[in-house]
Amino acid sequence: MDQPTSDEVPDRSLEICPITDIPWPRIVLAECANPIPALAASPAMGECERFFAESPSATRSLLTPKAQALLFATIRNLRPDHVVEIGTYKGGTTEGLARAVQANGHGTVHTVSPFDVERFEPIAARWPVELRQRMRYHPIDSMAFFMVTDRERIRPGIVLIDGNHDY
Image (cartoon, rainbow, N blue to C red; front, side, top):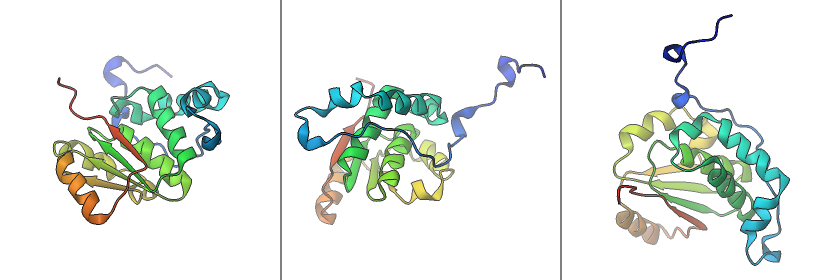
């Protein structure tokens, strides 16, 4: 079979990986003053990073696969009830965060951006239901969102500020 030309290469940006076990480095957080070097040195981190590098979500994220793998492993180890992402864009990073809380069996990802509803919602609608159930999109600015967290008594375990890159 002939290889497709560059004009025929399918657009993977709307593809979504199925729910799968993603390898991740397990560490005892209480034993680490700084867990980042321990996570990065683990052989499982390379496998985790490979998943994110090969996932179609990589085309929708402004973070590197290494950064996504580090966030995934941190969430898997920390097991927070709430993860907050400021800056949604196309939801590539949001998807990885949702995969982590889904794999943990609990938690919610709150992704916040007043500007990305038209980019993000059609992609999130394609996610497996297990991921959509672990995510709340807030199409508001971060100040309004943090007023919501105060009112709803949401206490984030992790906050990723990945907002406006124009400056």
